[in-house]
Image (tube, rainbow, N blue to C red; front, side):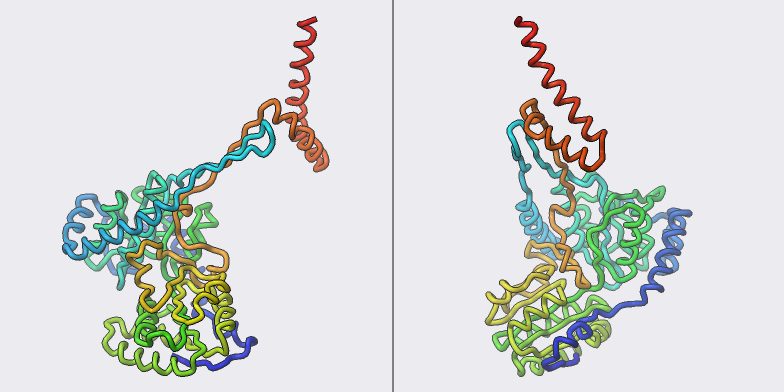
Length: 438
């Protein structure tokens, strides 16, 4: 893991670049798969599953009996852990419910906003070498709380054509009924267009590699919303000599082991810390089962020695990390200054893995610098807000003239007419009453 000492600001952008595959090669692959799935549906999904995953399937959908059978294979201690995480995640997302907003902007002009669930959502669960059953909880729990009517889960199958039992257990616990053995681009394409067996959805959620990210962005062109353009995982640790080097090394490796295209960064204003962390990394890597993957990710990563906590805050905001760990005496200052981060972990005793699994916060977060403009997944991600308004006769008198004036100034005569008719009728009503009384 390369150490860069006191880089000038002119070099920051280059230092903070993420590893990336060729956009053109990604786009070509995505377009090929999307076209095939649009034209050939389930057959294309199964063909690409055989090509990319080496598994032959008769159907991409996992029958409910098989979901239940696999779920029963989860050992008791893992069930207990999932149940604990489920409860914490549920509590945190339940607390995000908000009441309707009601305002009378003028006498007789009532406006309000209510949140409604997105009816059909798709959740993508990475599988392969690391089946992320925790992501089922992170996505299906808020979908259930929001009241989404249909949740479609897609995840790549193992060599036997099944999904990891813990994915099935989490899906069943969250009430997900449509579980599909499809991963990568073909899964996103299937949820975009819909096939005979895989329903089309209105919004797609979930992390993935660069191909999945590119596929989600392709889905947007077909009118399907996505949570965010999330890609390979990343963590930035901001630390000084108050931090534990072994903890830092483990935190860096926890993201590096996700994939070869992951990136981890250490920012510090303590000159001794990088050497101590590097020694811990070398020791831990030797024992890590996924050491080859983690080593490649570490090669994409940096330790950066800066002059001050002020520079650390500036670089964090420029990088906008998915995960940010702060183990620094200037924690209060850093929290005040930092504006761009997906999720923040404070102190020596708070590893990033707490948020990945069981603290209650959501681990589906913006990567690749998108924390500058995107939030992580929350309850609102599964809803949309509908606004309402009602005008009484007093309301028409209050704002009618302004509406007519503005519409005419924009040259939209029918807009003005729609209000003029109502204003005229309200003038007629009292006039008619006066004639009848006479």
